[in-house]
Image (cartoon, rainbow, N blue to C red; front, side, top):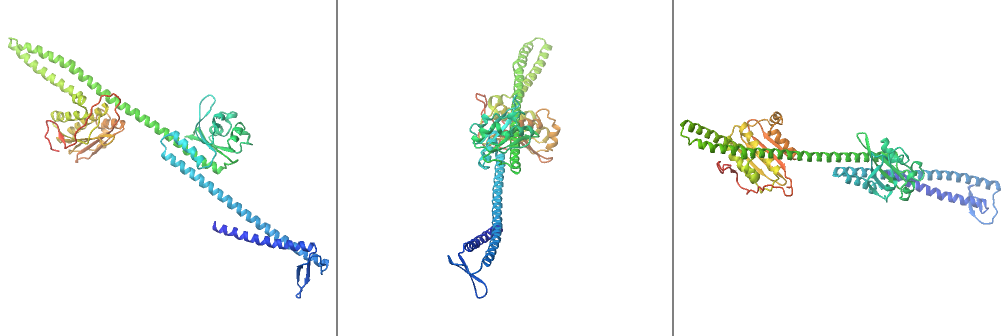
Length: 526
């Protein structure tokens, strides 16, 4: 570019000198023609000229004509050289201006693409993304107006404007654009949607295809337009439209760049729709997981009530009548009554144990903390497993489904320790760092291969597979750190949800402190 600037400067200097010499030659020629120039021969045979008005020429007419012809030929030659130089200079200037304009246009298009890609990266909402891309086209691209429309499947095959920016002033409401194969659908927008190819309106004033919109467009300063199809997997679902204040503003190169921008917009729209659908699906799965947990818990509660309100009452009544038999005079009757009383006592104890197992009263009445406090002695009594419980930090109220999910997971994980670890001690730690519940169950037993265990679980029961599956449906997860010979650590994470208004739940505020064990366990061992 610097070398080209130097050439232009030299050409301008040469053109200036040629103009000066041409002016001198024209003045001499004029003087000769009007008889105002006297040419006297010099001592060396050459002629010197001086201007003396109204003097006769000392040379003959033939000599004067010869000199004049020589001067004319020289002037014509210099004029031709000057004209060629000037044309060369003008061509260089035009080329430079065209190069500068092309460079500026390319920079503008690159800036547009860059800002659109940045908007795609930040986008969280479909409407906001479309608004931002239209804004970039106007503010960065310098266009008069930009809008996005979606093809509708109604009877008239209308195009519904969903976003616009720039000088719109009610144009879209009056345009009546469709993608049907009729007068209102054969403009750039309708044709782009039908064919899936970009379309250009080169001149609103002259193009017959734009006649339906000419008056409204000219009134708002639109001179030309481009319609760019929005497609996903080959299916066109709309178009992005851009209007310029100059005629024939969209050449093939520019339309190609703008179509890339429209393709990026289409990708962003579909990605956001997919993300929204996945979010909705995730919420549905979470709701189903909550319902499944609650239904299971309520069914356990119903069975516990049946045992308590019916079976246990029948067993208590049976004990009463057996007691009367024990007063019989017949020894055989008293012996039989004693055996029956022993059996009924065992049945009553089993019923009460089953009732507690199905629906622990501590969990129902005291919340998660009380449930876990009850679980430690219960595991010791039933399975000989000593449980050390530790809570970190203050706890907040939990919803019923979260209480149940964490409690059931803790119980099942402790069952795994009993069945597979080969040790008699497990540690349980619970914390609520921010917006989640963390439950950790650790042992120093035999360990196992987590992947093999999960694959073998098959999803049945409330085992490891089911714990992980339900935790993921609630937006959390189960992490397993174990290997043969080095113990196991299970980390369950469940996101906290705001309690519904009026929902009955239990606060589990516990005082931070050292690890604690159940009432029947050794204290301070942690």
